[in-house]
Length: 440
Image (cartoon, one colour):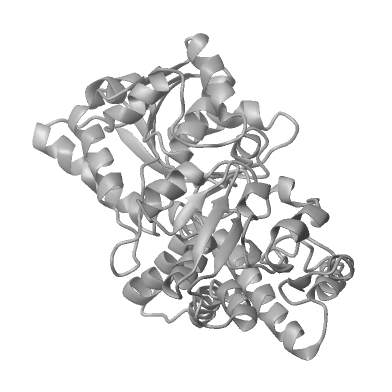
């Protein structure tokens, strides 16, 4: 099948590469020429395990192409995926300008039947707006070319996105046009040979499913973070509590790990957007999600607070070793990362920081700019020299079994603030450390 993907960001590039992997002829469009230059030269603009190799393989096979030519992109695919950014607007709602601009381009240039697929995470009602934008452009041209708009939300976890696309647990297609649904079934058939995973819904339900899924996961995280804070005050161990409630099949173990708060491109933005949609479109106050957001904002301050409890509120002259910058492991994504909240707090208190992350240091330098109080190390152990404490923000695998003797030798004092509960408290404390995890 001939497929166009508008946008070569996280969702667009993964979707385009995976669709090409199963034999489709895919053309990815981006208006940013620098992104297209990187892709055409064999690089990729994001870090995602397995993606670079997949892109290279399909480019070499002639199934995956890149362009900045809008007319070429619209002409190419019967199926047109819109996978552009929907950043939060000033009021927390999703900014739809890029989605609607892509829709207008399709309407302005299409000459035959198109299935326009909303792949970006968009508020309920977006498909109607996309449909109207295309209709408006066709009316300006005085033509009546047939088309359909469907919602096909993505459920990709950063760090495991290629596997998630190639082996989906569900595929949601929202729409009512029979030809469009037939083509979407054909497109996704290679990804569900084992058993049927495709669920067809009305378009508004499909749009809400994506927000509902992310809001539920964010709720579990904030709930466990609040329980961890309570456990700490009451002298309980949140790890034992997690095992106790996770063994209930109605609850399960997923997303029950307390930590330093959630971040990334999805959860913060989507919770905000759902709260805003409910308020503006339905006059509903989503009290649970408002509390989830507030709890997460508070949780991002926990690591700095724990550090100050040991070193004092004034951190002038204090140096901190920081392990982890990305909002989660296996990505270089720094959007809404808890590390940024921690850095803001400790830098404001006068500290300096040496940080290490396996993938996100270049992105951190871009985000933080020329911040003189933050330096970067080539290895985790290089961060330790002369540091008053080690703070762990991201649970990269290489942090799970460190040389504690070496850490103790290099730190000025044996203080570890662990925002991801990587270690057994009894073991680390027997090694002579002042160990501050979350809820233990």
